[in-house]
Amino acid sequence: MNHNKSLKIIESVFLSLAALGIYNGIIQFAVYPALNLAMGPESFGAVLTLLSVMAVAPGSAGVGVNYARMAISPKYSSSNGDYNAYLLICAVVCALISTAALFLMKSADAWALILFPAVTVAAMLRYYSDVEFRLHLNYRRYFVFYMLLSLGSLAGLTLFKLTGRWELTILLGESTALTYVFIKGSIFRRPFFRRSENARAVFGSCTSLVLAQLLSTFILNADRMLVNAFMGGAAVTVFYVASLLGKATALLTGPLNGVIVGYLARYEKPVTRKLFALCAAGSLAAGLLLLLVFIPLSRFAVGLLYPDILSGASPYFLLANGGQILYFISNMMLVVALRFMRERIQLYINAGYAALYFALCIPALASGSMAAFVTAVITANAVRLAAVIVIGTVSAKTRAC
Image (cartoon, rainbow, N blue to C red):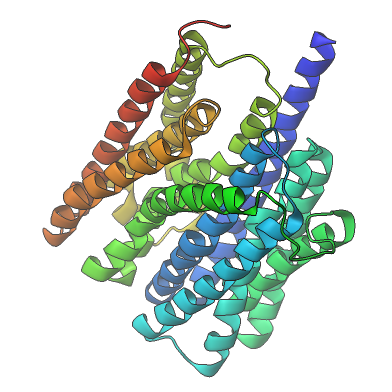
């Protein structure tokens, strides 16, 4: 039984990482380079900034409600309506934020005002929707879900070439994956908005985790928005390319955390300090290995995909990728801590992290130095990881009960 369970966990991790690895590979190494080639660094930098907005608001809402449903499932009963009602509120907020972003970026043409809010709402529902497969530990369907998302995004490039609208590239991928969930899943089945007796508790849990995720995701994507504000769209492209592999790794946080949450929800023993420390040590060792691999690999990948930006991005490969890897590790450790740490504490950790990040990064950008900025980012992420490990170790059980 233990052997079979171990094989099941290994299969889940493999399918989860493979699914997001393929998706991020297609986005980072096919879709984005194609858009950059067609649009040029300045215009593509503006698109990256809008995509950051899309990742922050819809991503935080979708992932936060996703984590809440996973955390709640072993504790008490809830209904689809509890989550759907909350998502409806989030959809309105996301649409308003995306509309405001278009005006701030001076990109608010008629089609953009229709398509970009639609993309953000679809993305929010997609971020939430993979809970359908993680709740039941069905990672084979999870894999299919992300394959459809990947192929839809790749096919969306054809729509971009025909219409010139980059939003259609993203929208086709999101809608393809959502259609699969509507057909195969149950989280969007009727009654859509009937709430359970625990609706108030669900609302509170969702809010805490959405806010915690919002702070974390905002920082992950704020780099591009801040660089755009202080240094312009071309600098956004340079920073994005310099941190390309590290950012792709940070984006794998979601699927890996999904596996962790799914199995921890069924883990009957307490998470001990020893187990938490082992997770931290293993994560740090894996992160160091990734960084050693990414330095030479970045030069090859950027030289192949963004040859015109290689000379400008190469001085920042070490620090830019290192900062993203530290972010990835701390996010993973926070999810492990979710098993025994109150949601509110995670919110406090991310609030402190946000304050430190801006305190370090804004002066660095104001100096006009990209080197100062990437140094500030890796410093903030290192402090966050240290805080997570210390607070998690103190909060974990001393011994198994």
